[in-house]
Length: 445
Image 1 (cartoon, rainbow, N blue to C red):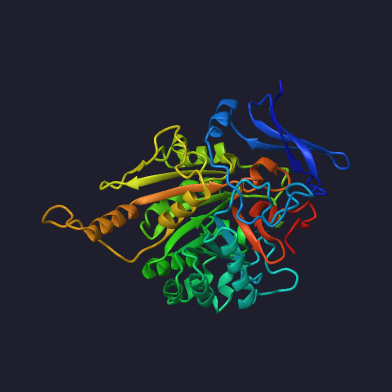
Image 2: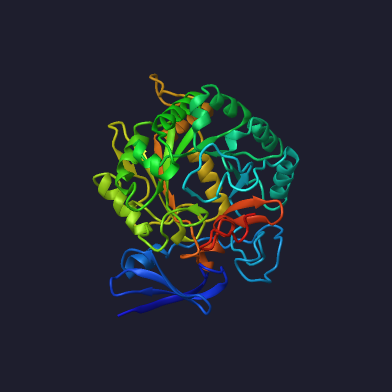
């Protein structure tokens, strides 16, 4: 018997019109979003691959309700049509993507930004400076994600980072496929000197077969070289696998093992189950990877070293958007979870999340050993000892991005990962990249 859990609003996958939606528990003990467009018919999408008890427990975490700073718009069209952010948004933001170029040296079959299509354009330094200023006037400093396209296609990337530092931003993350970092040995050090903290490295698996399918060419050798060069430069690296059903689900454990063997240079793994927007050639009506399924894959493929119960909804966003756990590596090499069972993530607001990410994902060049002659003698030694302890921590997280099939207004209103757009302002990531079945975007030009 189907049970109505609650109601929300979503969009029609065909026309992107805002429509009513229901969350229902079906006979298979799984939870679905069900909705109907008067013009294009009914749609049904899996959103939680576990029982109702686990669904409610996951959503019990209490998050701060925040007001955007100097919101750009009042609600007129209705969410998600008034982003910028609007006065109805429930987060002031944490991480901001600056898309520096739509050029790319790959043509991935699953690119959310459809990079390399239409007219190729780089933002000018003046436009980037204006975007920095806008962000500072609307709640900054935020954590800055330099993105694209492929941002390393720009030779002035170090200058862009230095400009942001001069304007008061303190954390810079590079979203990259790693090709230039791999092929130019000194490039990572150049970016580090400019002020880059972290490399968010596209990393879909440990075999070339996976990259052939998801990225169009073999890349495993480049991935390893990029990590090596970043480590030598003192840059933190976070591996970012897109997990697609039937393609690389069986490599979740291998990816985690690969990452843990390369601590402290690799600071963690951030999984992104495939979302069906942009230039995604996979079938949106097929199998979907939910949070419970990802946690089962992690537990099974690590032999129970990492357990599903270690995880909770991460950050300040809606808990059904993400998952997170932190681990500490002991002297024996074993890992233990830093949060006890059924307790929520420590990050309850945008500022908490921003500070956590900056601390956990950054790389440092300093090394410290406990003095043989007794306890730590001054504050600088204590700071160094705490830094060494930080290097033994390892973060495992993931984000379930929304596409037109599972888009949920309740989730988008709490989004704190925004795309910076000169025309619109700060647009939640999933709204900015939302496409209909023809690949037409709601916001992205």
